[in-house]
Length: 348
Image (tube, rainbow, N blue to C red; front, side, top):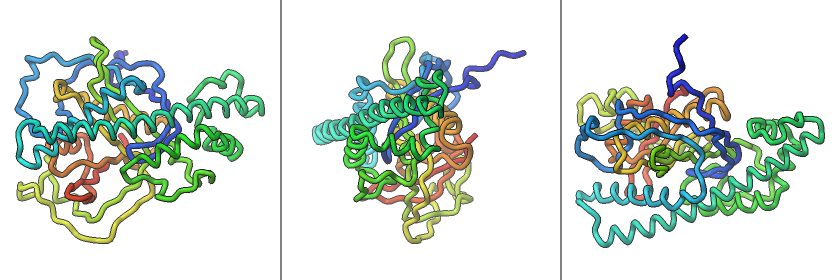
């Protein structure tokens, strides 16, 4: 019998409670999962990069795991740098100007505030869920051996009493509200949600933060979030206009669009804030993060449906990666001068 390949190993992320867009709430990756180097696919790039000879650069051994609070500073630095790189590329610039450097610092500060609030909400959610599990054990709804097992937190969503107990935790509820209110992206809670009222859709409480770590150095080289978020687009186009490279049949990369009213589906599992360290791109890190999310969501959240994400229309490297991973452009979202595609794929 052949031994399982590293990518066939089950990746656990045990997360359950959440807040919004790039946001939501409770997460734990049990054991670390070591993933060997891979150089067969490109990772997300926020700006066009030169072709890299992967034979001359050793790919890291990866550990895909739950994010730790002390890593948020490094993570927001990666996200802010990626955001600035994309902005510079759109304007045809090279390098980082003084103005862009200041903007990068501001972006990092804003992102760190948002991620800190989301992380604290997840932490409070885990504590609240632990207290609920203890009550369920006392009520005979869980076996005593399951008291500290987070894999049974799905029981909270399936039981009215358990959901009420969770929502009665003032610390969790207030931290969740703060996380939602500081989120600048669209989310499923609504602008004026009353957090004294338990949500009808408990899926809004599903969220995870995931880190890719270089096992040899312990440094953070990749990150993403996954949450139940609404699909919002202002226009759509026929997916048949895209070939395997994300281009239309004419090869010019321009899609036929059909304008229609803003579309809002029910929330779907969505990847957000996917980023990799510039020095470690094109080594399969983003690919491994996407596949880890896919496995986790199928195991813990839903058994079918779609996995979605938004991507800047100008980010050719990211578009190439997502198309190769099976994501199909479904619509366009325009925010200010930025143009984003909504892409999705069925779970694998």
